Structure formats: C-alpha cells, structure tokens
Image (cartoon, rainbow, N blue to C red; front, top):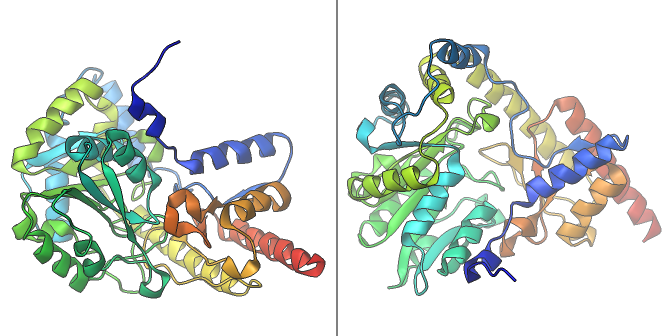
Length: 394
C-alpha cells in the first residue's frame, strides 16, 4: 500500500468549493439555488482585458516566460503600487504567480517546520492553517472579534509572538469577515514587528481595492522598517473579476526573492503568457469597471446587512471591506455548519459555516454578496422563512 509523507494527512481544504459543488449538483437536479457561498465577483472580466489576452495570442505570445513574470507586467505592478500606495517597488522584487494561494504556499513552506510558530488570523482564509499544519509548524490563531469589527489589533498579534515565531500572516481587508485593520493599528503592528527582524510577515492584501464608508486600505508596504521582512500578496482575481485567469503577484524582500523564483521554476515554470499581458492591460487601462463593481458591492453590502439584521435571532456587524458579511447566528440555537447545510438543502441558499474558517468561527456563517441584489433579496427571504418556520415548530 502506498504511503505518502505524513504531512499529507494534515492538509485541509477550502470548503467553499465543496459547497459550490453541492450547490451545482442541486441546481443540475432542478433545484433553484441562490449561491452566497463562493467568493468570486459575479461580473465579467472587463472587455479591454479580454482583448489584451486575445491580442497576445494573435501576436504569438505562446511560449514560456521568465519564471517571475514578463518584465512589462512587473513594471506595471510597480507603477500601480506607486499610484495606489505611494511606495517604490523594484520590478525585480515582484514575482507573478498563478493565483494568490501560490504565494501563501511559498511563504509558509519557507518558514514552516516542526518547532516553528506561525501566526494567522482566525476566522481566516482556511488555506493558511492548512499549509501551516502541512509543514509541521504550530498554528497560532490570532482571534478576530466582532466587537472590533473583525479587524486584527496590533496587541493581539504582538502578544502572541514567541521565540519560536517565524512568520506572521495578516489579512486586511479580510476574508471571511470583511474586517479592515485601521491605519493606527497597522502602524503599531509594523513598529512592533520591526523589533523582531527574525520574523517574516505575509500581508495578504488581495482585497486592497475593496473598502467602504471612507475606510482606506493601509498597506504594510508603506513601512520601510519592515520591508526586509515583508512579503506582500495581491493580484487581479477580485479587483478585476479575473478569478479563473489564475493570476496573482507578490512583492518579496531582496533576501527572499531568489528563493521564490526557484520555487516558481520547480512548481509551475511560469504563468500563462497571454494572461500576463491581460494583467498588464488591467493595471494600465481604464479603471471604470473597478469603480462600478465596487459601487455595486457597496449597495449589496448595505442590503445584506440591513436584511440580516432584520432576521429573527440574527445580528450582523457592518463589514468595511471585501465582499463578505459574517452574521452572528448564535441566537438561532443552531450550530453554524448544520445551519449552513440546512439552508442549502432545505432553503436553497448556499452559505459557508464559520468553523470552516477557524476555531473562532462558531456562531457565524459567511455570506458572499458577490451576487445580484435580486438574488440577495431572494436569499434573505428564504433564510427568514426558514428561521421563522423553525421558530414555529420549536
């Protein structure tokens, strides 16, 4: 009998894809399903980006590219970071990868090993803990709390540092809660982590363009005191509705970028060539579609929060970023995952149970408002009917 390495038994999954598969199966059987589970924009990729990929194919960009990405794209990333954050980043420090998860994998692989501690947000993107456990490192959850708007606090992070800490993962704006770390907290965190130059930082900023109510994203790239420790993750999937293009990037410090390049060579050689030219067009072309998408998300966000707070025994803090709400369902008497399952199977609404995002997720479900207002309203109505009927029979 074949026996893979022990670490394979510790790899987790991202249950949003399992829920998507079940929702698709039910829809195939004729059920009317509203999917508020999967975290991807429901908008098409803007036409000028699609055309850039088509042109690249017609122009003969069919071969391998440099492992870290074509230079014109890395230069476009550098220019975009300067435009958005006012920072100087050399294209030599930019590594283009097939999706944001690759950067997570590389960073955790570099610093995770038995005896090491890695801090990560909880509730948080499930791949963080999955990959930490794969490496044999000790996962150290940093709780995100409803009373602080699900934004991490510097004190919560810094108080969990130990001599064994090798990597700290930060995600703002955050998945699954929609929390945003305020500028003052980001500055305090950077100052504290600068005192531990032996600790690497992975800042997942994939939702950096998605903030609301005047909240501004504060990138850790803006703090020179930690640039030698910082791996900043961003990409095109969320901002430009390009999830299926599999295109992301990271900014790596000088002493790590060579290691990242070698991992690219060993893992995937390079990123799809036409997709890279599409990524360049996204950054350099008109941003109207991004603004329109964000305005639509904002309208949906307000409708979701109002609708959830009107449901029996449900409360919902207002998310400040991304496109997720994380309502508190503890008052319903349900555990989160059974409720999410029942909503899908009985009410035809796909959501994700909070425990799929960590040990601090119990009592919550994740709602993605990357769906139309019409569908959101239908889903809220179904959830309300479901909870109301259960109240009657309780």
